[in-house]
Image: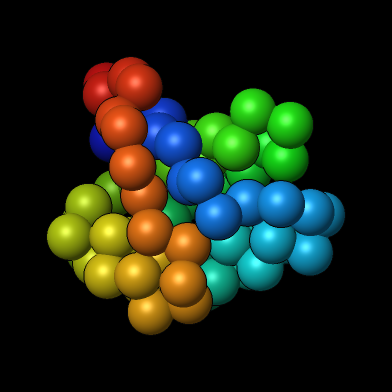
Length: 73
């Protein structure tokens, strides 16, 4: 399983975090999504067939582009 934590500057409320969690959770292979309003950080855990490229593309599509990778494992 792969995990990344990154910043999403567009997070401003609970609706934002809910939207990110719901949209990314719908991707096949995404195991866990945690978005935190106060820190504007998102952690995503996934396995194949999900890819980082697909996760990034989904975030772009819903207007929450990722910025500043914090942790990759």
